[in-house]
Image (cartoon, rainbow, N blue to C red; front, side, top):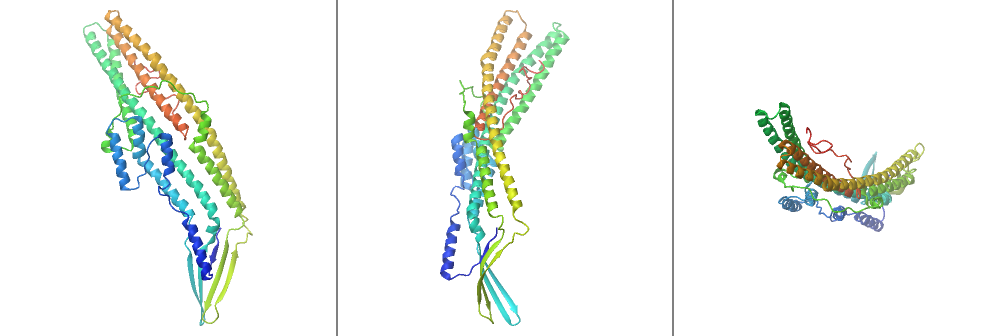
Length: 477
């Protein structure tokens, strides 16, 4: 809707009107922190981490000093998350959306500048001058609706940026656990290779003196070659997981030499039951809140569209024409668009369809959120049970078998190759335990994100570490 007036009033009234309009325009202003406080408080509440938006050289320098301090020691998972939140440049780019959204909100609350028009007409010797002062009254009348809509849109932007902060934290945690687990896998794969090389060398010597057949020798050689390939795959996985973590941390150059611990954190003693986990998720999921805001905004838009369906152009103005041969003319005019062909039905129908779309999107988001949090909780509990079984049942059994076989070897009841084969199985079970421990910590990160935002859930049947089959045994053995 467009409403314009050519305003020529007495001085007192005109000055009063201008003052009132200036006060209305001055109500919209920028916040001191660029609307960053909402996102910062959310990060503190959900992550207990600091969040900084680098908008000056001083702030960038302070962030760089904090990053150097974190990189000076081996990274814990909390250090890695803090480093990513401070140093990830993609996240800093996301923060710029807050500045863009706030600028649009402030613009929605400000009146456009007034305009002045001047016309000179000539009819023979007669010269006519026309002057006009223009104010966009449409903006003034629609300002409450427009400001409300922009406020909801800006709230959606804040929710979206907060969601990206939480997603980055969860992705960093998962990348960290993958990287540390890959480091452990390489270490144990190296032990397997060393044992395989020793067995192959012993088999070569025994075959040379006639105490070993070619078939037995070939089997040991094949296992040694396979162990070398598995170590190469583990090294490749370690580089890939470390580079994934590097990208999330935003490190480059010498910063990529950050240190990781040698092993994953231990399992917690217990995990708490959460029977009301769906209700908790519905109360704090950011994507559900954003979907609700979108539906409310569409409802507001629909109301404004219905209100203005018949009036698209309304112009109100006061005129003052001057001529060198006639007295000055003063008056006013009203211009209205006649709804003869377009009654606004198409605009209303479109607004209603968009509103219904937003309502169904909100319902879909809520349904998906409930399912995602159930899936994340089930994966978390099952991953804990599997890791406990690996650590407390399977690994002790493997160790018991290894100890018993060592006694039999010392008693000359079994040979060295039986002892080496058993050692390989024990190392493979250690790798399976590392994998189960890694999966638990990743499932915990997924659950944490599922409670507050949309998670990227890890598949229930995660791929085994490089060089292992589905049973956890070394490939080729």
